[in-house]
Image (cartoon, rainbow, N blue to C red; front, side, top):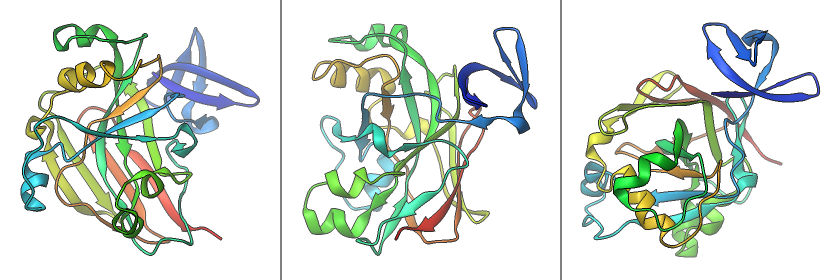
Length: 239
C-alpha cells in the first residue's frame, strides 16, 4: 500500500513498478508525491531490542520491552528532509522495521497479534543523542519535527527473519537481521496493547540493530528492510 498526493488529492493505492493503481486509476510514480504510508495517532518505539545492539553497548538485555513515544508531528515520508535542530550537535540515524496497525487493538495476545497488523514499513528513529544524554530521558531527543521518517510502502511480510540495512552517503552503516530481535513483533503488540489502545494507522518501531551513528547536514540516509523497498531522506540544518 502507498499513500500519495496527486494535485490536491491524497490517495492510497498499490505500487507496481513505476505506477500506482488507486481503485482502477493508474498514476505514474514519477508524477505524484509519495507520502508517509500511515497517519498515526502515536508512534510507539521499542528501545534496546536487538541482542547485538545491547552487546555493542555493554548493556544487559531487558527483561521486558522498553518503550517510548514519538509524536505524529515527527513523521515524514520518503524524500523529505530530516532537519537537524539548532539545539543539538549530535543527531543519529537508527534504521528500523516498523509495524503499521490495521484495526483497533487493545489487550491483544501475542498469538492473535497478526490479526491486527496492516503491514510493515521502513523507519528511521532519528535521535538527538546529546540531548538524550543531557536530559536523562528520551522525549525531547526523539520528538523533533522530521525525526520519524517512514515508508515508502506498507507491505505484508514475515517479520521473523528479514535483513535490515542502513546506508549514509552510500556507505553501509548497519547490517543485521530481525531474527536478532529480543522481543518479537507479536510480543511487542501484546505488551503495548496491554498499556494503551492502538488505533488503525498507529506505528510500532521495533528497535535498531548495531551501528547507529552521526548524521550531518548534506548527508543522504537510506534504510532498507528486506522486501520493503528503500526509505531515502536527505539531511539539512534547521535555523
